[in-house]
Length: 476
Image (cartoon, rainbow, N blue to C red; front, side, top):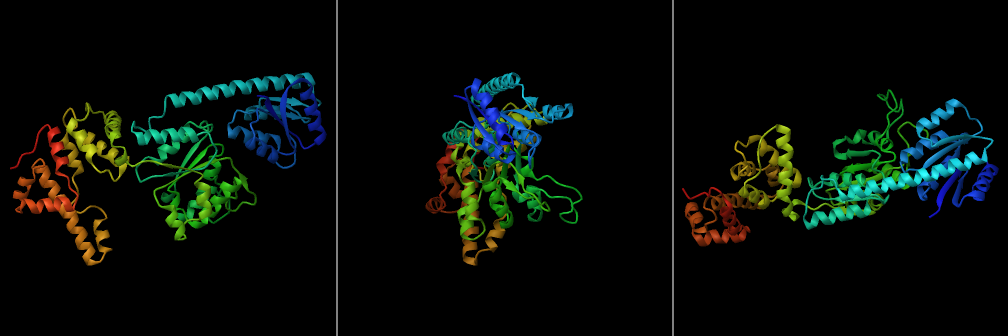
């Protein structure tokens, strides 16, 4: 494959001269641009190995173009070429990252030799980047932990899309690890050397979200005493992760749409647009299609974000990963708190795998953390886990939910909550023995079986767990 050279100069005759010199001695693909803005578009749309640019051009000069190219971090070598060469300019260019600095009138032999070295340098750099990428995939990040089919499929899809430049929408319940998925995409992409900027959209008040994302100029509003760089600008060349994108206000959605379409925005109080090269990854735990139908989310923004969609599975769909995750968190917190816990009992792990983790991995992590803090023995056993998993008499939000219903529906929901927890406790106490549970409750066995069926309670699960128990609970 031919090496690709981009020549940038505002003078057409200079571009023709450079092309003629190169084509006489080298087999290259040569592209040209008359200004820095056109050069940036060429670099975005094509694979460019070497850029040769003049310094003095209308608009953005060669040094600014060099900075933009270095921010992209794509391994392109940049040679500065100017008739106004001086030591200060040369030092500035080399500090920014220029491969070399040449002056006009050209020494043809030196020019060709410099191009040859730059092409070879680019080839070695790309080979190094490819080896690093393969190494990252061979030794994947341990942030997304799991061997279940669900998580392995997710990891496979991430590997497939990481090197594209497309926007990604990550869906999933709260606590499933959507940010970890976004970080993995960035870490194995060609942007990995640049910044990953995570923005928790709901945590930023609506009144300042726009200025946080896009920045502002001094004097833009009363308290703007100096310029502020926005998060999009600070992520230039890298990746920005917009967590819970469904919660941003419509006014900010409009500006975000322009960034996705035009790769530019205007900070508050500015007179010129700022151009950025940023990959956008967004996440949501909401049904954006429903929000669009209600007018709370722009459909054109949704289509721009949803170019590639990933779903992070909830913990209930990857129960096989729970022991692996629990032991990972155990190791993390025993090191953090300086304890000597050796692991989980078999029954404790069984207890963890049977729980319906509504808070997903984050909830599991917090339970393990508390177990490490409060456990006294050499291992975390079932009693430690069950103490942490006991349901509250009235879980957070239940009363609010009940008071939002009519009396008949609220009464039905309250009775269901009480019955499920009461029967569950009895069956744990009797190791799943329905007859003994009915005697303790003071009801007929047939009546208890009716309730088990009505509320989908499986005594066999409790009997199975009792079999694993190191200290079974007997009827008192």
